[in-house]
Image 1 (cartoon, rainbow, N blue to C red):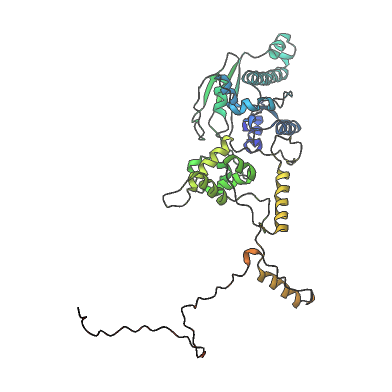
Image 2 (cartoon, helix red, strand yellow; image 1 turned 45 degrees about the vertical axis):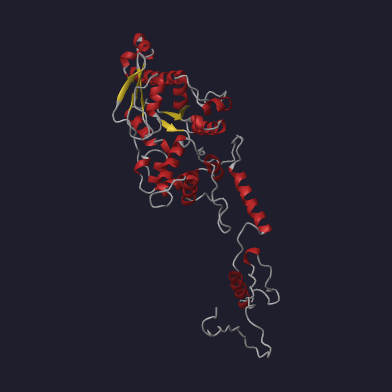
Length: 419
């Protein structure tokens, strides 16, 4: 079962595992945790501990890195972080192509051996026959491994990397694979690829499925709800650093740790990229599609913690501040701004007057204590009145207080001039 390493439990279907055991009690499900290169080593350790605790078979894998290595192209982010992400623990390291093929063949052969031994022990004639016992415990000639999972988790990419050439179509749009196909790797191993399966789930909404890549992005009708899912999962400073934008800060009466709103995110992104619709308004639909594609492709780094573990549990310092440090820094900035009185908007005076009058009416405070402060903010100072310019008036010698105006009399025309 292929799952996304950033949120494995979202893509895992325990009901399908139980259904496979009902058909054949010897069948086993192996979680192929794809896109593991997007996780730090500390997070892989946490997920490995969680899987071991719940007795789940798992393998960390990156189809993109394996394909690039097969083609002789080393990814930039893989090259830079290769040394950092290497792990000595065989359970937390990212398996290569040959290692994954060997693991899949080993697990499949073990299942076939268990099935044959169970069938042999159930037959009384086989119990007394050492020849049949030897045949039952021998390695099978050929095994088959099937791949299932949600759309766009990397099933076809994984098979192409394991086969060594492009045998199945790959695209970022979910639903590319339309039919079931069988691929022979060798005489001992055969792989099966199937279309993506959207399993029934009551815990995820339509917008979460769009943000996770399960549903096509181009078919979404309401883009703000899907972008809000991205804003809730990615930290504020990460969005600002990746896109080189400045998101509006929360108001003083709002929680300083709240995620950015979808409207704020989209408007800031449109302003930085110059996305304008024909109506003259920001083209939020185009911006939402680009943001969701970056979120799915891993340009916006994010990952979910295992259940029962917080963000402070064992996450190594990768150079970026943790969530608690960001929240503490935001809170300290707000406190400093409140003390200085320069960055936050003051509370309206009429609200304070209403509160003081309410306290006086109920006898909660004495009248002497309610002295109105005259310290007004520099933003709300009274504008000085400008004096009117009355210099055009003529002074009145009689000083009766009435203004006097100048009167110019036109000279009378006395006739033609004598030349």
